Amino acid sequence: MALFNINNVAFVRKTAVLLAAKHGHSEVVKILIDAGADVNKDNEYGESPLYVAADNGHSECVALLISANANMNKADEYGKTPLYKAAENGHSHIVEMLIQAGANINQAMEDGRTPLYTAAMNKHTRAVSLLIAAKAKINKQNR
Image (cartoon, rainbow, N blue to C red; front, side, top):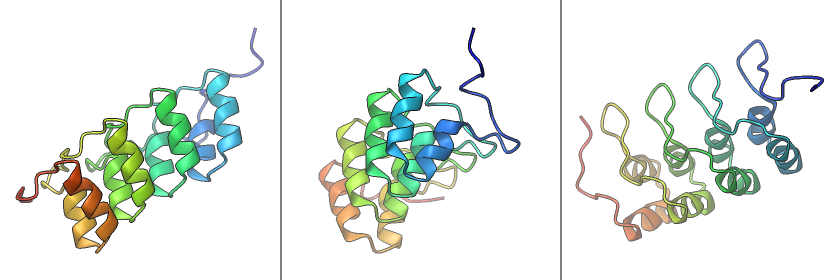
């Protein structure tokens, strides 16, 4: 019998793996994954461990979570995906990782904004180049 539930959430619905991923603690993320942590359990905003790792530029955590079959296209309450957050923040190394792993490059928010749209809006030229090379729809408009 386990001493505790590894997928238990704190008062703000954050699991240990989500907190470790958010803060870039890749060794802890690996231990938790190996112990059976749910890599897709999200917080109260719909943010998954992969989402917060991508948002904060933690490539080692992103790689571990992708290897553990984290859902790359799971969106938060606003429709933002891990790829969208990486593009929005200019984390081009993570944009590249997510593209190579098969993330949906054209998945849009409810208002139609895509990862390419947000990368362009924020002047992240490397992310824009990666998304265009991956055949992102360059003429897609927001609503």
